[in-house]
Length: 255
Image (cartoon, rainbow, N blue to C red; front, side):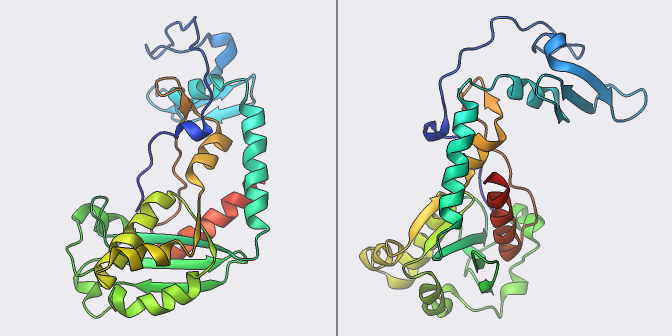
């Protein structure tokens, strides 16, 4: 589980608001119809859903809002996208690269229930369910399908940490919302070591890369409200190793 919303200023560029935003057929503010292109309902006679074709970009979107966000991209988008390509190429060339994903008990004060780690070639190095010694929120279980009774015989993080340290030691870890995943591991390590210094020392032996903001820039959905590229869901399942593989596949597409 990860949280994603809007991109940080690291990947944002100042961009003026459009001065002309007439009302669209749906009654919402948008851009001139001649720029937006055509709208085709996905169901005959329906006006609630459809696919917007942005003719000037030759791109299609399921929602009018996303079509407008694409049209509002800053002039620097091509350069921003090239910067993302260079970033992705550099990471994927690193022989010490790992992709990591953590499924958790929830979004707030979360504990790990599954940890997955693969190398840059897609080989699984670590794939374990984890007994969190804590409740799992119904919302979390509805996403990843993991429940407390199903983890009653799973190893705890303290049991798994020697193997996890061996896998991650000195490696470069990329994650989708690395701050969240690293934060979960930090919380688990603090509970295990009962010594913040030892926990931090372990985490500092890895280098961390976050793919969420670069992916937002690569997709190019501009939020006028936040004046930044809008965070995008990576998609896929809520299985840790499957998410790692999807992340690497996406990074290859970004190159």
